[in-house]
Amino acid sequence: MTSLSALAEVSRSDQVVAAGVESEQARFDVVQVLEGLEHPWAVAWLPDGRKLVTERPGRLWLVDGDDITRVGNTPRVNPEERDGLALEASWQGGLLDLAVHPDYEDNGWIYMTYSSPGDPDAVIGDAEFGSGTALARARLSDDGSQLTDLETLYVQMPRTAPGRHYGSRIVFPGDGTVIFSIGDSGLRAPSQDLTDPAGSMIRLNEDGGAAEDNPLVGMAPGNLRPEIYSFGHRNNQGLAIHPETGEIWTSEHGPRGGDMIHRIEPGNNYGWPQVAYGTEYSTDEQVGIGRSAPGVTPAVHYWDYSMAPSGLAFYSGDEVPGWQGDLFAGSLAEERLHRLVLEGDRVVHEELLLDGTLGRIRDVRQGPDGRLYLLTDEESGGLYRLEPAH
Image (cartoon, rainbow, N blue to C red; front, side, top):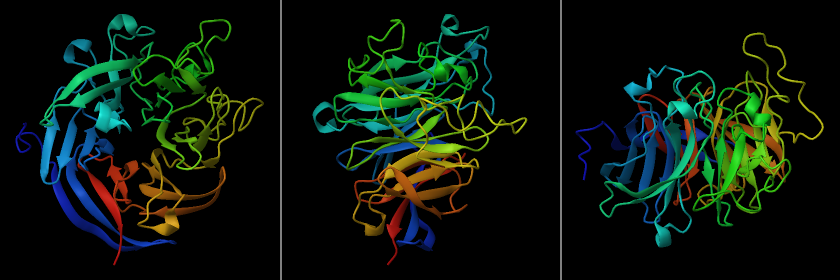
């Protein structure tokens, strides 16, 4: 088993960092669970209560009480020196989302998304290096120190050079498939190109391959990507399944303003980049043809400003009864947690929580204890738990 002290300063905390936070439906404390994480991206729980946490630089941690183990044999996520690319501050790739299969106790599968660095002949254009979103699955070794049976189920092709907008959230809808998001790679146009998976929601069989009942399967002219489930997306970094209806909801980055909440339906076009709620970064002009168009599914909710959504969770726990059925979205740019109250598919109220308290909120999950957990995307980030104040 790998020694933690030789690798990082990740450690258990259990420190109250904000006490008696008042909200409309609850009064809660914010407890830091882990500290010293470098740009953490996702947290998930195994059935026995152990936690898995990904860090964007490529590390995976297994947390078992006070024992914290770096898990080896993770996928290669960053270019090496021979790839001829110096990672810049704008690089958004790495080890990203992670999800435990609902039947983990029977099959042991853990799924993860990451930026896959490819060979030069896999790159579109003149760039010498490109990357794409990939989905893999693996099992944990008996001592938790290694991934075993690692297999890549999908790699985005073609790869591209900008190094951003990987999407990457994963859900299991319960029908033998897995759904995950791919961003537009920072290139916009591929989101409306059904021969290119960029800017889409992808639906695969759990063991790989496009699901045979996906909306583009068998559709003329015959070269449309069969793995595409919906399209016209910019960069979905929040993904959650409604606990009662089974509907798939996402939170998506707009350009300058215009971040959105979507309810995903198979085969639908969500508009990007022809339809957007935001403006161009350089000119502040409206992106595309406007905020709506025939054949484009409108957002359930949008923000005029750039809150930069990442992490999305429906609350169904008993710890805070007043939150049951509400949708929680993390905000990177505004450094806060958004509580969205729903009536059907409409957002009827919004409450802003933890404004600037923790930093950039990257992931939002409900733990097996019925409490909300948050990850902060910082150079020294942390895992936090919201628990009722007594």
